[in-house]
Every structure is written in C-alpha cells, then in structure tokens.
Image 1 (cartoon, rainbow, N blue to C red):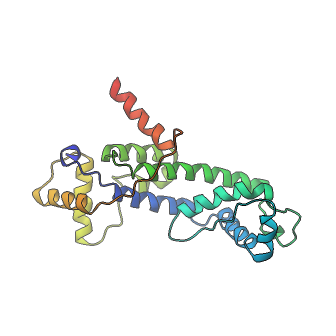
Image 2 (image 1 turned 180 degrees about the vertical axis):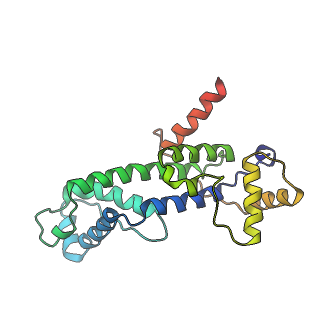
Image 3 (image 1 turned 120 degrees about the vertical axis):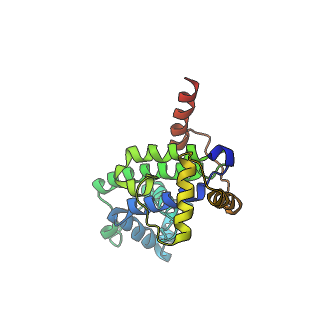
Length: 219
C-alpha cells in the first residue's frame, strides 16, 4: 500500500528519531561539561588565546536541535589539541580520560543518528527503507524501543493524531486503508516537505543499513 500511494511519511520518522536522540542524551553529564567548557573558551580573553592557535571556533549545544550536540562534540574533539590544559580557569571544566572515552562513544552513536536523519530527507526514501533504518538502530539501542519501534505504544492523545497514526502504521505494515485513511495519507504527502541535504561520499551508517536490504533483494 505504501508503494501504491507513494507516500513516504518520513516526517513522522524524523520526529520519532528526534525524540529517541533526546532520550539518549538526557542528563549526560559529560555533554553538559563540554557545553560549559565551550562557553568558557568563547569568552573574550580565552577566545583571543585560542585564535592564536587555530581558526576553529567553539560550537554550542541548544535545547531545540540535537544536531547542535553532535556539532558541539565534533568541534570539541577538533579543538582538544589547542585547549590550554594548564589554564587554571579551565581546570574545573576539563574532562578526564575516562570522560573522553564516554564522549567518544556518545559521538559515534550520534554519527549513526545523524546518518539516519540525513537519509530520511532523501527523495528516494520510502517507508520500508525508514523501517530498516529504525530496526537497525533498535538492534544497537534496545533501550530506545519506545521511540524506534513502530509497534510500541505512542503518546498520542487527540483524535486527529490517533487517526493519522493509525493510517501511518497501516501504510507501513502494508494493510488495506479505509477511504478516510487514504485521504489522511494523501494529505500527509501534500504537507510533507523535506529539505534535501548533501550526503557524505563515504558510506554512512544509514547507507550500510540499507545496503543489507539490496543484498537480500538480489538473493
């Protein structure tokens, strides 16, 4: 049914992915510490000293976009060689080797999420591809089942959202839709506008996950 309607409701998956990542990052003290460190080295004096060593500037986390956390951690590892570890003002904010190992693991996981997020915005994506991506993430992160498993209970309260959710689930599972549900799916297609981002030429987590589908189809 998804192929018949040709309606990849990827905005729904993007929304669930965002919730999953926020849950993954919730109350991570290492990420919070990096944010405070970034703020400290962006002050006038610290920033001037940093500018003598590199053109890279601190990047901050914000509450509305988890991708800002990904970008902040990426910049943290880029700036590490240039941070003055003898600066007494920075000492309370510097991370231990153990904390750095935790952050590296968090960053690698965020790379997967970022890869899937970008893949969901490509024009040739469909619902079955999105499901493969989520299932692959779910195998690595079963603790995020509430957000990544399409069959898990969802926090849907109003009747309009319930009808839309039911239509989406039936489309994903390739079940027959009522005429009203078909109208909902068609309306979703009209409203769905995804910004297309450039994909890295190297194989990403999302590309690797979808490659498994292509291998199975050729067997």
